Image (cartoon, rainbow, N blue to C red; front, side, top):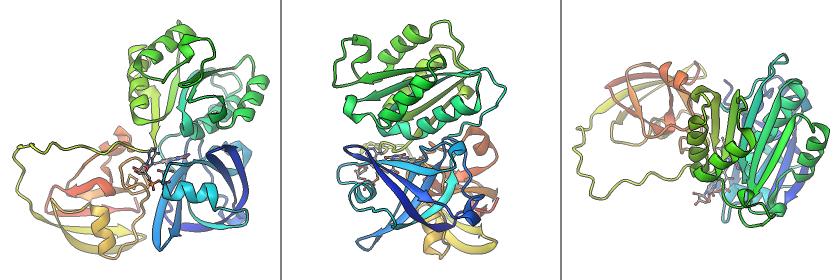
Length: 356
Ligand SMILES: Cc1cc2nc3c(=O)[nH]c(=O)nc-3n(C[C@H](O)[C@H](O)[C@H](O)COP(=O)(O)OP(=O)(O)OC[C@H]3O[C@@H](n4cnc5c(N)ncnc54)[C@H](O)[C@@H]3O)c2cc1C
Ligand code: FES
């Protein structure tokens, strides 16, 4: 996995909706292999804004067969990077970008005859759009149902492209818009995508249909509700995939009197790009990522919230615990991968590698 940043030039900017800009990049020939991606993956950007280094991840909304690299960035009120991208980015500007990564992936099989169900809300449509296009082009015998939630018609990102795709694949794509603030005369399609609406949508549109894979992206509560309803509808857990852009902070109770284990000092040996960095870290101290940084290792990261997997590393000796993990697959956890931004020592001697 390459964790280096590369300078890429912005080749196109498109205002998809009032608060969402899509940005395409020119990837030079010699970087194209490294920048090959799988539908659903994301890019990580690094910029310096007012003297502060900011890193953020954005899912690719282009599909691999399009041979373009485009992300769509929705402005968050007071959001540092999203406001910069929506108001200050210009064609020709350079941005530091890490090669695509991420576990939210759809790898097509040209012979498959599957039916997929996709759920997106707001900017969560970005990786879903890449997956949708990939299914329709690279799995010619498969069908898709997309449920896409927005406040109203004008908030639909990729509206014209979605309409064009729908018209082109009339018999293979069922596109259902749900509006939380606009009434189109169908009560089922008015409101948020919560548990009760998901249950009704599944019954109304997918009764007796096989679902071979489900992909969800949107706010955390919507993802959890849709996931639970899909499970209850009979979709196997390993067929349900989701991407979280932002996790609600974990609230610890002020009156939590659970006895805490005594803190201890751990020796950490960290391998990155073949170089070894040694440092000591208390089990109740900062994360292994933050400590590694302090010790001089230029370890990769983006969200620092356990939702991307940019900071992934493998524990080769010793044990660590994670505060949260919204990004690693159960298989990766089984293979001793951890999110270093969430990791703390559980043993006194740890060997951890970003190179494995
Ligand atoms: C794997 C991955 C893929 C992503 N893909 C996309 C994408 O395709 N398009 C896209 O627009 N965003 C995407 N994001 C979210 C993106 O990385 C940023 O978190 C988001 O743009 C906010 O960054 P900011 O610097 O503008 O806001 P910040 O300055 O970081 O935050 C400002 C405030 O908004 C809150 N906040 C931060 N992010 C969110 C959020 N997503 N929703 C609600 N509140 C938030 C913060 O807690 C803070 O209070 C993705 C995130 C991940 C982890
Ligand atoms: S930096 Fe995103 S999970 Fe650690």
